[in-house]
Length: 146
Image (cartoon, rainbow, N blue to C red; front, side):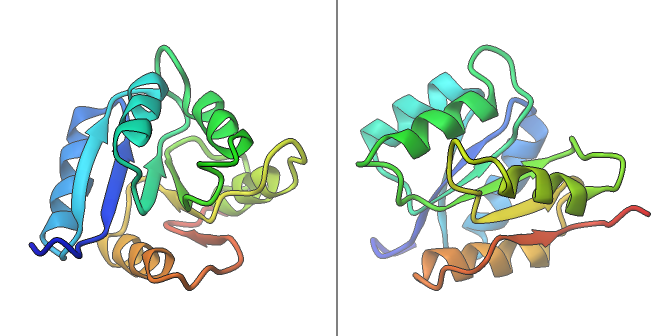
């Protein structure tokens, strides 16, 4: 991988998910690192600013929600795109959960939303788009539940 590879920080307390997403991204030209909770993620972001963060919400210690609030409250970090990757969805499935996060006024909405299990093509499409500078309205991808 060249030095121009975009760096993605995968934040998930499930080691298998972290390994899976990291390998998927690396096999497709990204540089990926993992953090197991929000505290580790903040340290990683401060050490080497990523081009994209994939973020699980439900984690021990510092949760994904708390990390996201901290990230978006800091002027030096607010511009990093974040994709929520979670198995936590509302009764209406991923679209209801996305709508919930997009209506919170304390912080900007995430740049994307992927429901677990993550579809690899949808993950790569979103990662490429967000790291190319082509911001979009928040995107929901993944299995929908009726």
